[in-house]
Length: 426
Image (cartoon, rainbow, N blue to C red; front, top):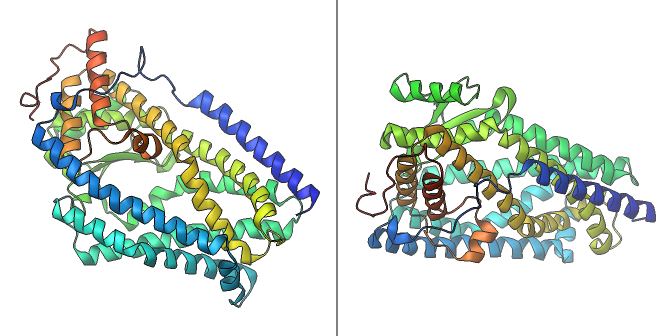
């Protein structure tokens, strides 16, 4: 890398970092709970001793399999990326440069999947043993295959763009590639609901009825335009309850799991929907996408400097650098997780607060949080460092504490909040 390359990479890094910090300060709700987020509620005030014990038993082995898979995937990526083995593998491939990039991505993704497959199998068996999935081994394999194909395709598109820019603009490539990848992040968020989500679930409109009418009235009251509320056939895969919002503009959708619609009382389901409507009202998908775009710019700048230091005098336009780029991406993603998840937790907390204010029903909110946690066997008291590093949502006990705090400080939320595990039974 020439002096001009390094200077461009440093400039892109600084622009991306400043943009990320400014956008995060401006857009992320860092103080979503009036008076500050309270400490978590006592576990025994929400769950029975048996529920706590079962959740902790499940979570212990779930962490073993997921963290083991993460460690092995990082080791594989680093072995290929930070040694000469990865470059030699790519050098044996034939064809135009872009085809070699695709082949290298496919080979390394599949090698990583083979290395971590035993942990995925053990995790699926663990879910089956605890009744958290109904999916047979054939469906599990099909989902795994679809997921790897999506990973190969999206990663290949990004790396072909990155390396193509480096070949076309040898000195200015960090600026050009950073801008294009930032745009790609925004486009990806827009098209994801239309292209990727249907690969894993079928979606149908929420049928006419009391729940649909209540949802539409709530959306109108909250000023959220809703073309439709969709139901995903998630029960064929999982017994856990969930909902989410994805996309933006004409692809924005609020999606409820079918088992959530069927298994939760309407007041609790409405509390879930109110949370998702809050995401839509604040355009949280757009916020995440814009932050992701600035992070992509920052990442390309870092990548340019890292390749300069570790690339063994190879230029970024050389497909043999694909293993190094993937290794740096894997390590960078892990190191960035605390920041990403801190942003996510604050956004999720704001949605909880808005849901409580919209429904005026902390009792239903607490019952809903309890039911979702019990069904998913979520650890009520995960290790603090694990929650800090990997927790994308507040814990159930923190969310219960928020509802109780708002109940005490906001007179309009006047329904009784259950504090006894037996009274909390739905």
